[in-house]
Length: 575
Image: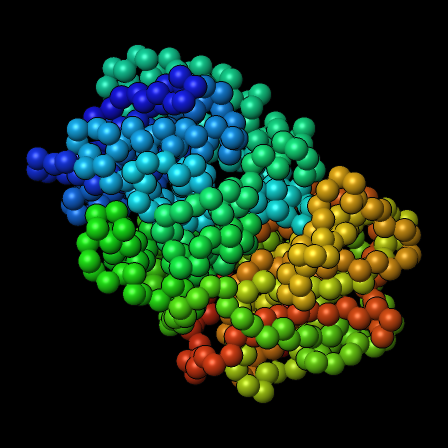
């Protein structure tokens, strides 16, 4: 079933519906995005030429839900002007929910599901408190797009937004294919009109016009609407997400904690497809809060953390995510969790000293020599290209072997005293790794900072989470050869450092990470990093205590999005 619903301002939005067997009426689940959601059930969809998961839709239909796909305005074959996360995105979602609740095939109970763009739509729609909406289940969203994607730490991420523009165009080609097979001339004409108009309103275009956090940017922060959400929420968050940083604007902290259930996991962007997640979390959540089944979900722990997530099948488009499951789990009944800040001082001779103090003269490195690529689309789940001058263009600080197991959890902060040589700015990339006793180095997490954007919001900043002021008026240049403190936010993660392993921090220029490619500050310099008593550079991690870590680690390269490589600083070459 396909059709058009009318938004509050009269704009016509394309929708399509898949119905279960039986008479109905049925509870309704909406997937709302600007990809191809308004064309589910079409010929492209049936050929699995679909952004999201056909298998998940099939499961939900068999559980008795009607699945409704809604196409965002100005995308696919919906009318209107494309405006990513603009103010009308939420009100259009409200129109869609209230339309669905009133249809003859609907029992009036509506939920929303999906990840990425289809996750952001849920938060914005729920903040409008539409009649009939019972629950939402967003995964992997941009809660604060500027800091989560467009310019993390103030460093422009132009590669992702550019390639994303072409990905969207490809998804509209799938819309065209379905419309052509259905001889839907209205849809075909609208797709062509939207394709012709989208460049002038695309992110690729707008981020050139709005490089800093201005009024346009501030209008597009789903996190700031989260406090208006009144329905239960199931949130999924992936630490090494290659498309959306795990920070997600920390929108979950603005929700009612009694109505929030959360799954956090190592791994990447499409783990929402995991059959384990679907069967143990998503389906019971929807059955309880949308259908009204008394299955006891409301008594389940509010937080589950998947540690060292692996996949039984690493080959194929869906299989690595569908077969993903945790190596082990942690459950708690509240979020956020309290952790202990643990300080590691950077010091001379590449030392990282726990609860100690740094010493020695500054270390220098050439800038900009980018660090090694990791988890890029061309070389996924892997370390990639490393610059031939990496020894001159990076610094590394490594701890002594841990004497006891150490479980990190949450955000981290790399507090670095840096100076530049005759350059008014520089971009910093910080990479956290684990070095195992067998000389394998494991990727853990990365963060970035443009030093001119280093000024903090002191009221919001903590020892573990620096919060940038990030306003045009807060930009301040570097003074040549004058050290300045830059606190680099490391997005949330959880990683077990077992007894005998070492913690390492790398400092260099930004490099491709997942789908992110940075337009780093290009003026060459020789940067200096200070670590004496007057300039105490340090890494601060959160330690989660009271957790028994399994003694045996997973095999190298088994954990999703946390690839291994032979330690490049080892004196022993790999076999």
